[in-house]
Image 1 (cartoon, one colour):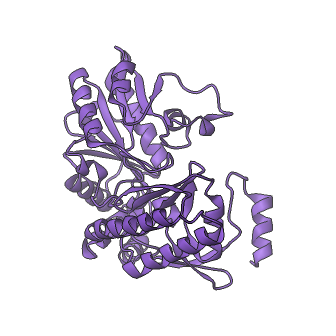
Image 2: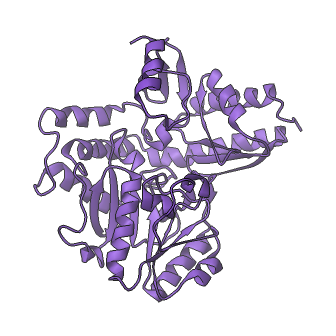
Image 3: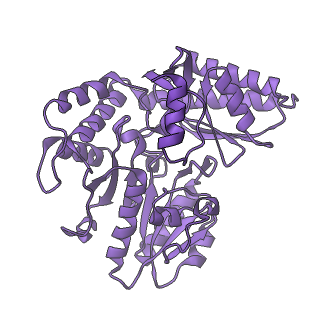
Length: 397
């Protein structure tokens, strides 16, 4: 298909649910994407964090090639080795528990909501979530999301949810009732603008939930699988959750999600209480195993810590240079640059110069490069950002 034919087919045949950039990508390798005309782009926001080991990583490709010629799908009332191996690897790297496999972060959140209500045994069903959070687009996950802009037009939303300010332990304590069963939050809010939970806050939440027999769920859909420099962000806090949601980077580009529940309560779910037709198929589980191999073989966790500090330092220098940069913050390679003006013009300028980044919350530039990003690639990205700020009148100090 030619370029115009592709654009026309999208307009005629695909629901208009995305604001798309006018580019057609046909190849990806590592940190680079190539469009239909052969132009190459440095990808510093690979698939909303899905391609965290880079595009088409050899370990992931090898795993998929090996599996696709053997067995692609079987129903979940049958056994297969890849699912067992993937679950064991998730548990080995997180905490003692059991895994439910699904297809996305939203599905993992829905599973967490159902699990919490099952644990509450109809007597307790209220769930507390945070303002500026994001948990997905399905109706339960949407209600848990603490941003009304995503909820507009979809009322009535399910009952039983309360939203309180992020990083405010007292607000959570005041929202508790005898019907509260769970607290769900991101340790670093992604769509909310790269807001990082404080250690005291998370440890206080764990203590509060323990005292009230309330489940504490961490949404690690974006922070999980190495993004923050630890395999899971909760490891920065010395706090173990009762449940954790995973997706995005777990499949290296293939759709897989997971809800991980700690051992002591995992048997709350009984056969028939929840299911996912495609969840944990041989193909996606094999891809996930390839992701883990890629992270270990290239020491990506160490690189994430190192390069995260390097990029934050370089961005801080830009902050000194340009007055419109209000703040620079991040954990590992989950980085935000808060501006005093809307950020879309900077995103567009970077795009034209061959750098892909994201803007969330209207004024927070989001950078989430692959975990194996090099210093050379980081310097190139910073140079493009510098040029974009300069050309668009960044208010040089």
